[in-house]
Length: 86
Image 1 (cartoon, one colour):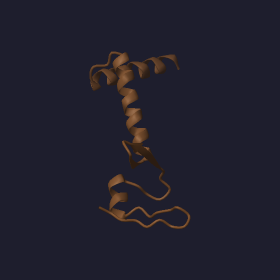
Image 2 (cartoon, one colour):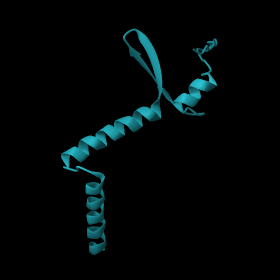
Image 3 (cartoon, rainbow, N blue to C red):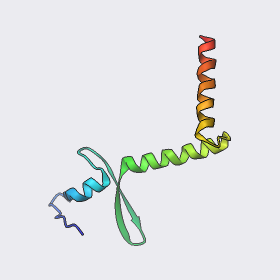
């Protein structure tokens, strides 16, 4: 468990161990999440990355991609088509 002190401006310093675990660095943004009477905070870029990955899985399913190899073939076909039209 870590302890931080609140300043008169409502600021806290996130302990180094917590910053390291969340991969936070200067200028990063954090989300505060309230859930079941508790407050959590999380690295905003990690949330964005997770949401992006989930969206890509959904799109891959819609496009009927079953493997990474399917995606590689699709990209090669698009590149071939672009080069043919140039």
